[in-house]
Every structure is written in C-alpha cells, then in structure tokens.
Amino acid sequence: MLNVSKIRQQFPILHQEVNGYPLVYLDNGATTHKPKVVIDAIQQYYEKQNSNIHRGVHYLSQLATDEYEASRETVRKHFNADHVHEIIFTKGNTEAINLVANGFRTLLTSTDEVLVSAIEHHSNIVPWQMACESSGASLKVIPMNDKGELDMKAYESLLSNNTKVVAVNHISNALGTINPVKEIIQLAHQVGAAVLVDGAQSGPHSHIDVKDLDADFYCISGHKIYGPTGIGALYGKEEWLNKLPPYQGGGEMIATVSFKETTYATLPHKFEAGTPNIAGGIALKTAIDWLNDIGLDNVIAYENELLEYATQELAKIEGMRFIGEASNKAAVISFLVGDIHPYDMGMILDKLGIAVRTGHHCAQPVMDEFCIPGTIRASFAVYNTKEEVDRLVEGVKKAQQMLS
Amino acid sequence: MASIKDIQQDIIDEFDMFDEWMGKYEHIIDLGKSLPLIEEAHKTEDNLIKGCQSRVWLHANKQEDKVVYTADSDAIMTKGIIALLVRTFSGQKAQDIVEADTNFINQIGLKEQLSPTRANGLVSMVKQMKLYALAFQSQN
Image (cartoon, rainbow over all chains, first blue to last red; front, side):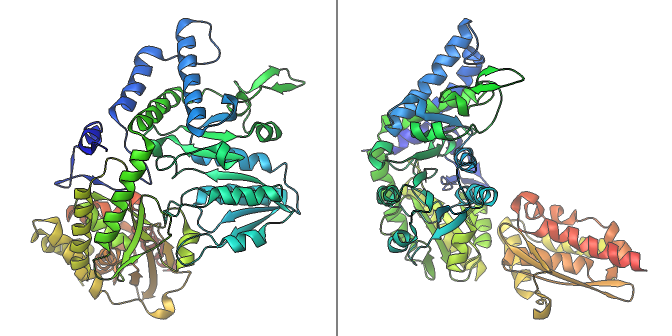
C-alpha cells in the first residue's frame, strides 16, 4: 500500500495555491514534478561534485564521472538491458528518436518503408518524415480503431520485406492506450525490421524490459519520470548502435582526430558529443531509484485505481465523452464535454487551480482521426489523490455551468 | 463614433463592475455568445489564424476611410476577447488602429488572454488587424 500523503510531502511544488485554490496538478503526461531528493541531487552536484566528465585526472572529475556512469548503470538495470554501453544519454525522448531516425537516413533506400502508428505524438512522426524525405523511403501509418487501439490486422498487412523500421509508442500521450509492443516487435522482426519504442509515457507507468520485449531501441525522458528536464535515455541493441552513424560531431565522441581523418569513440560515447547534462544525468539516477523504492507495481496499481475512479466520476457528468477508450489504458483520461471547446474548459479549470492539458497534445493526426480540435487531458502521477479527482469533477461541472 | 481610447475606457469601466474573475469570465462568455458571426463566405482558409489552442477567423474590409472587421473563433472565451477587439477597432480610421495599443485587456484583468504563450491565436489576430489597417492606410 502506498502512503500517498507521505509521498506528497516529498514534492515541495505541490504545496502552493494557484489562483487562490490549492494546486491540483493533473498535467503529468507533460511533465511530472520532482521529489526533494532529485532537487537535492542537482544542488549537491553543483555544490560538491561539479566538474567535466571523462577527461580529467583530478579528484572532482573522477567523482563526477563515476556518478554519471553510475546513473547509466541504473538506467541499464531499469531497462533490463544486457550492456551498459547500450545506454545513450540524450537531452530527452525527442532527441533520442532524432538520433536513431537521423542515423537511418543513411541506411534507408527509396524502396524501403517506415511504419509509424496513427496514435503517435509529433516527436515520433516528424523525425521519421525527415528520414524518409532525405532517403526517399516511404512513411506508412498503422491505423487505429474508434477506441484508440491499433488495428493489428492492418499492421500485419502493412509489414513486408520493404519495412525497415517500425516506430511506435508504448503508451499514447493523447489517449493513454497501452500498445501491444511485444507483439508489434515480434511481427516486425519476422520481416527483419527494427523497432523503436517511444517510452515517453511508459517510463513512469510501466515496467520496461527491453530484453523481454526484444526492442531494438527504447527511449525515455527524464522529466516525465520525476527526474530533471534536459536528460533522457536511449537504449539501442549493440549491433544497431554499431550500424548507425554518429549523430553529432565534437568532443567526447572521438577516438583520434587529425585534419585528415577522425575515428569515432566506441559505444556509448560515439553518440554523446560534447559536455552532457551531467547534473541531469546524475539526478536521473536519483529519480529512478526513488521510483523503484516506492515500487513500480505499487505505482501502477495506485494509478489504475485513480484512473478507474476518475473515469467513473467523470462519466456521471452530462455530455461527457471520453476520447480513447482502449481496454488497456494507463493514467491518462482525454475527454470533451458536450460541445464545449477544450480551451474554454482549460481556462476555467486553471482559474480554479486545476492544471490540465488542453489542445491537440502535439498529436494533431490523432485529433484529426477523431475529427475534434483537441481534448482536455487529465494525466495522473503517484502523488495525485481521489480528492484531487473530486476537485477536477467539480471544476468540470462549474465550467460546464458557466459555458452553457 | 467614439474614439478607440473612449471605447477602451468604456470597456474598463464595464469590467470594473466585477470584483472576481468569475464575473469577468462570465461576461466574456456572454460577449462571445453575442458576437455577430463572420459571414460564412469569409470563413476561409485565407482568413484563418491558427493558434495551438483555438482557431480564429478574421476578415477586414475598407469602407471609405474606415476599417470594418468581422471575426469568429471556435472557442467561446477567445470569441469574447475578439468581441472586445472588434468593438474597439472596427469602424475606426486605419491610422488610429495602427497607432492604438491593446493595454486595456491587461487593465480588465485578462492579460493572460493576450499572452503569446496561450497560443489561442489572439496575439496573431491583433497583429493581423493592424496589418490590414496598415495596408488600407497605404492605399490612401
């Protein structure tokens, strides 16, 4: 059992008033707040450890390097990856996808195909569009049904020997759908395609086991799993990371440099040009350790309870329409009420101290599929409570009364 | 016709009647409901200003030396602010529109509505209103 009030005490930001009301923060799909231990880890780094890593023989440099590399090991363990050099630090999930998609520009040819799903956010669409544009490959879309689930039959029929990459999210940010990634990967591997799993939303809400999934690439953002912004992690199978060309050039990613020729560093440094976000990397470890201390199983069970309660209470509101009703869902409720525009609803909820996301959630194609301008999205984290769900429900009712 | 400044002052006085945000918002919502809609023929892609959160249509035409605006939005709060902007600027001389400011929105306590970060299309709409005025002015 989780002691939620004890967990809440660890988040300084939650204890404030917004527009005269105690803050209700339900925009965790955009970013989660940070527990005090993570904030302290950042401060401690700058107060006691700050130094550039991988290049100094002095004490502080060694210390910072050890801490940073310990974080890589923590991510490896968290992902259940075989090798620590299969973990690349990036500035976030988006950069991780760009790193891979950019590498594929040189591997794809004009007869090749890249598959993305209809429920991707822009970060897992645009980098692949760019890769297709420069290589001449084509982008195909795995459709969804009206519940917001991927059409697996259609997926199977899209797969062919021309399919080189399949890029899908583990959990949809706009709808909360949990995709059957293991099955998606198995099917893709039958035609020899590589699979990138975008774990931006799954990081805080599910176990990640790249070995069990047999994922070729898997990425997360630190700031969505209670860690700092500006840090993320990419897992890539060793053989794929060796195949991909470097992403950026600079210090750290080289073995030798002369004006005639440069040779690249081995993994993972080949993909980590320049001084990284050292403080972020170190604090990411703190965040993952914190999450694992609470226990992901506890988190998942509690968030499911919140999701169920919120769905049940919101459903009582007249005109309530849920967008995305997949049978397997995580911590996200997207909805509309009658013909109220999501922006109007969001403005009034904000005035009531309730933070939700409104709009297309950087997933315009998903909204186009449902023929709606956007949704109101409440997304939960481990520190949310049923009382906060009640505040949301009251807020929605108040807004409905004002707007109709 | 009253000057832009006078109309803006009227609006500030009108909003002074409400002590709380809720009254102000309800008033804006009422204004949003009452705005005469743009003619369907003018609700074109060309006249569309895409905000990340809401969409705005703006049409302008010149009547003698005055600029007449009609506008619409899919979000009612946005439409309410549009009603205030149209009330202030429509029927005014092009030069006066170009020179006018929109500070009255801050003064009525709805500053956030005209913030670029809201991405509701209103900032672009004000810019577009002024650009129309500037274009008509240079035709004179």
